[in-house]
Image 1 (cartoon, rainbow over the protein chains, first blue to last red):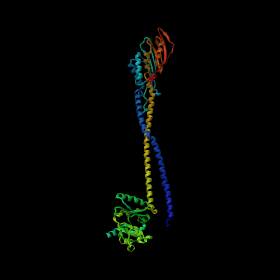
Image 2: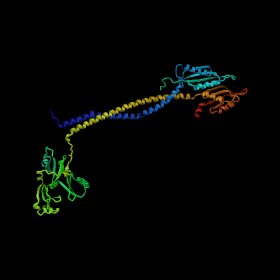
Image 3: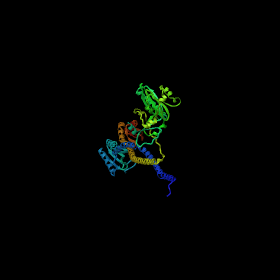
Image 4: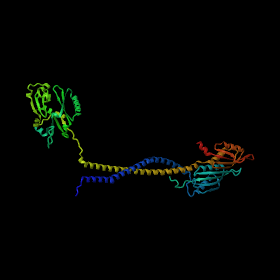
Amino acid sequence: MQEIKPWHKLSLLVIAIMVLLKFVLLPWQQWLLNNAEQIAYYKGLQSKLQNTQLRADTLKQQNEVIVADYQQLMTKLLPASSDNNIDVLRYVESKAKQYHLKINNRAVGDLQQAPLPALPITITLQGHPEMILAYLQDVETGTPKVVISNMSIIKPGLSVQFVNMRLDAIVLLAPAEGETAI
Amino acid sequence: MKHMIARHFSAQWLKDAQPKSKRWTFKVIYLAKSDYVEISKSIKANWTELLYILKNELAMHQLQYEKVLWRIQRKPDHTFRLQFVCISQQALQAYQGQFVLLYPETWLAKQCLQPEQLYLIDSSDKYWAYVAADGTAHFTDKKGLMVNPEHFLSAIGATDDKAETSAQVLNIKQVTLEQPILPKWYDWAGMLYYRAPARQFSVTGWKPYLLLGLTLSVIYALVLSAGLALYRDHLKEDVAQRQQDAEVVLLQRQKTEDLVALVSRYTPLLEGSAKYSNLLMFLSEQLPAGTELRRSQLNENVAVIQGIAPSATEVLAQLGKSPLITEARFDRPVQAERDAESFTISFIFNSLEVKDAGN
């Protein structure tokens, strides 16, 4: 068997070093660089997201205020349902009865969605002027919210003590479920 | 005593290399007179000052020499004699790494001499030695004028008529070979010597260092890799959690914005409350007495009233005074009707705007 000479050893050492470089050191170095890049990326993201909690707290406070406003609003609106026409008619009739007014004519239109969900209503009443005024005040400030768009009051004769009032109004409805989820 | 010295101490001259003994012995090294420089100082001081002077003198001599031996002698006149022996590094190179007691030849010789007796010391160099009655030792090389002992004795202030004939020859090496001579115990402190051996890097033993280096490198690489991976994973989890939180916040923000939009759509309608009843209240309070309305109409802000009054002009003037009303005018010509006037007036009713401006 041939004896291993010193230059053989040196050659083997050089080969071993090159193999080590190629298959161990360089891949490891690449892995380190990739890791360093990832760490820099994550640190950048982390600093961007640093104030999330602070913003969440501020937003929570704002949300509480707006939810309170929303709930206050909902108390003034008629909940949307398939029986809204009947509910509206019952409401105006009960109010007319309360102020001793006679309903000459009443009609509820089709549900409108824009700009807000509402039911149009036209109503003609007859009664004493003071009762008409009280009725009007009650309807305008009461619940559900009735927004009058046109009002006409006519006194049918000089000697009569009553007037006829025609109202064109809309009754505001609450938004449908799902449109706004708190 | 002699037996104990022989058992535990070995003595040799500095330049006489001796094979190492198997048994450990404390070495006493005799220094030939040519191996060192001797300096003496007489000092009158107390013990504290003496120690301070000794420290300074040692520091000064050690700047030039490898080792400075010292000893203190108290003289009968209550002064001190400080003796220093300065030795170069080359002289002591062979004794690195071991404790030895260095004993200068002149100090050794003095221990063997009788006072007031002239000696010719036979060592590597021949020189005269004389110990005065007060214990002061004098040594001079036997060279030049000093070949004659009378000159030596005259120089040191001693007289001996038979000096040459009475001079005793002392072979100091022979004496020490017969029996090792140790210095006085109280002089040992200044005569001990130790120097750590110089470490030398051996290029032949590189394999352990290579293995150690490789092992340390692998451990470093593993620790670095593990640390990086753990830190990256930790960051990744943290960022994922924060992103999740941010999405929740974003969703919540979207819901809030939707609510705000919804509420803001309803708000104008809700605020425009009681405008029509306000108009009726206003007319009933503001119109002049005797005015009777036959027809009142309000569409948005535009109002039209029709009726009879004693003076239609007064009605228009009254309406024009009110800050709630603008652009009041007759829509039709005023007609006389019996003892009154029939009128139709239109105007813009600004109840809400005026109320808001007031707030």
